[in-house]
Length: 377
Image (cartoon, rainbow, N blue to C red; front, top):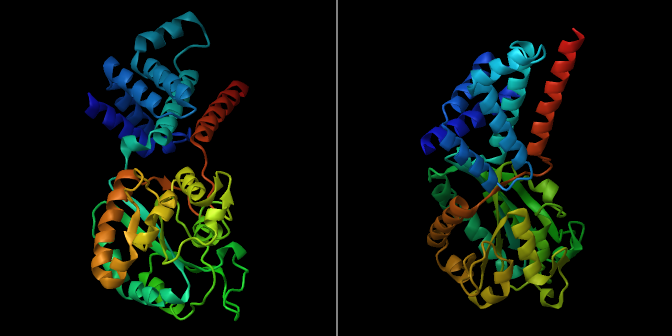
């Protein structure tokens, strides 16, 4: 039973968007018809349950679409009954348009509302390193620059990762924003040193260059992480790709200066916990590599977040400094686990996704337009 349902969902996910056009190949429409008509009554019930579990606002429309698609496609008795009862419900152009409309609606809604039903076997991943630029971090920039291939190879070598890209943001007094002068020599308090890229040689070069651009000041870690999230000061220039699992990796040996006093605020409140709530809201991960003495303080801002004291997304900076290569190998393993089990794909910088309901609306408008053209003819 579930194999049949999986086959149907895979079919609509693959060619569903194509049949939204009434000029699409007849073979595509018949592929949907064959997949839908192969479902038994029990399988249709399960399919309706899957739509309910999708928890999308248009689930009722999906159910109606699937229901009527099955009636119009799978029951010639019903179709013939309509044909006998009136001139309008005859077999021909009108019936074909109605069939196409209902199947397009079901296919579009299922294709966009149930991504897990035909989920890709691999996931694309974007990682943004956000690193404290205080003087004590100079060696950490160099260590990461030298050993970044270890981390990259461990992730790319896993069959569950489709593609990997990474970038670099550096900060000091991040609350002053990208225009703030923190070095006394024009150094930015918050900057994208390397936008998200698949060219890891460029990332390594950026890390090396930034190792000589360290300076003193206060470390506004929460402002820095917030800056690369949707709506943040650096989001549009971060280079996040569309439809990827996104993870921030914060590296610092200082706490977030002043955050316990409520300096950092967002719509969820103030301090570490508020940043954590925003990360959950936008579905970004946030790993923090810092000193163990700071774990408890940083934990509310980390994601994924386990039980208090689990420190699920916190990693020891001292271990990174003692054996960078070994640390990055283990860190890559932890990243793979969280990315493949709890990571969610999101839109990229300057990408405005079209809601699934819009596809359904467009298919309906197309159907009405087709009927009106036919009536005028």
